[in-house]
Length: 312
Length: 318
Image (tube, rainbow over all chains, first blue to last red; front, side, top):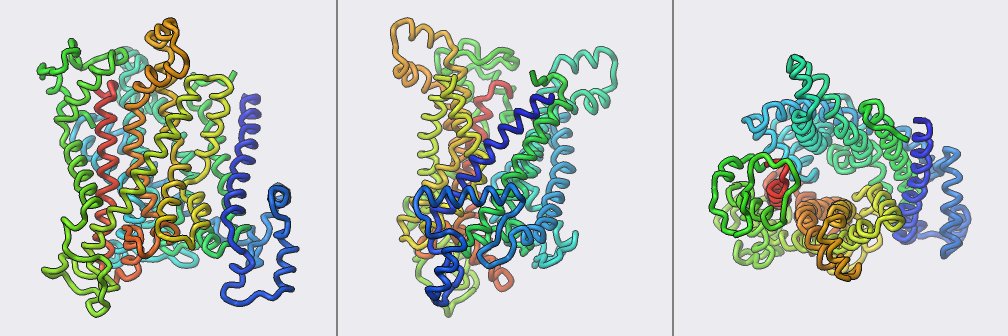
């Protein structure tokens, strides 16, 4: 177990370097003139330009300059220093303010997913080919096929404006009630996937030999499904949920934008629009770490859930 | 989804392809036999699946819209007059006019072209990359597989939307055509991983089959085995994944255009119209709802089509 975790950690470090390097390179390649972008429409004096160039090492061009900046940046990252955005704010401060909102939103989405997705998935699998099963299949297909940019504005319009059940926008310091509708919209996609995954997994496990054995021993159905089948069926679902938590935190750009929620995705999008390279790379690296950590946690959780899985 | 009358399908013995000697018996424990009989079974399932026909119809409809939009509307989507801003439905424009005074329906019809172009070409490029990478990784195994699989892992770790935003920033001032190609390329470069994994696993399965050993014994080289013997078997699952990917590429294009970094103004795209309609939803919601429905139905059609075909080919679900 220890060796396994060690190996996974090493793998994670590799993936971390690979991903940050790619993101950093993309940002570097895609950058126009950051100094002008910072100044907006106003002219930039030569002295200001020289100062900023010096401060952010923008004069070093080519591969050497790129790697110089990348290594400098990584060094700061390891020390927990994400640097400043081009507007002069500490990126860690921006993130500290945005993080709780995004986590809250992601947790609401995850709760919706687990509560409805997994439950409905188990029910659909038990009553396979029944009315409920068909209805959920059609519904999940609908949800899977409808992009967030359709779902979010339409939900906002119908449930926020036309029939004002929920507040249409959240704004600063959003309450739970204001985050509920965005959370449902955000979670609907993972809900549909979790439902289908649970259904398939439970269906397959219901046919397994150990279920027949358990039935032959005279166990009641509720115990077979609730303990034996569920424990084995939830392994892929847990993986999915772990990966999804990372996705939910990074994938909230649209939802946070439409509902005006001041979270990480909102800041990230703003950073991209203002060509704020340091801010974008800072946020994305943190998101990558979150993603990798949730994957690691899931892998370790595997061993707890499934005794068949042994790591050397 | 193949639960729709699967049992009835087994009753039907009108197997037109001579090979299916034992038509889809309900409980097949082992793996499917020859690919032809599997395809025959799948086709019999599909023919009876209403979801398949419905999605196929939608796909054909959208393709027709993209090819000849003039068939569906007589109005010019770029003919915008501010004086009829948010005017209601009329004989001239069945869904009325949007904020700029353009025909909402005509814009939605003309929007199909950009979406389908992006979706189809991204899926095509994705397919080529996935086939090459999956084939090499699956066929050669060893360190080739190790390296390529790590590459897949890393690309899979990049959030598609974030990377696309960063990449497309570069062409933010370019012309219409350049942007279109940029969107296609970016989506393809970031979206090939799932298909590559599918190809890799089906290649690994096919590699161990007896007919590959037989071909090798007859002196066939690696290239010939890959091209003539393994590729045909890896193609079917790849096409299914690509159909679904096509749907999600259309959604991704609309999302990027919605954010203002994908396609831009003179190009007509559902994403742009949804964003524009969203701003004025309190005054008039039709300019938001119409392109939304078009986009959702198109994406749905491709996903349902892929889903139906996959289910029909999956012997486990029989």
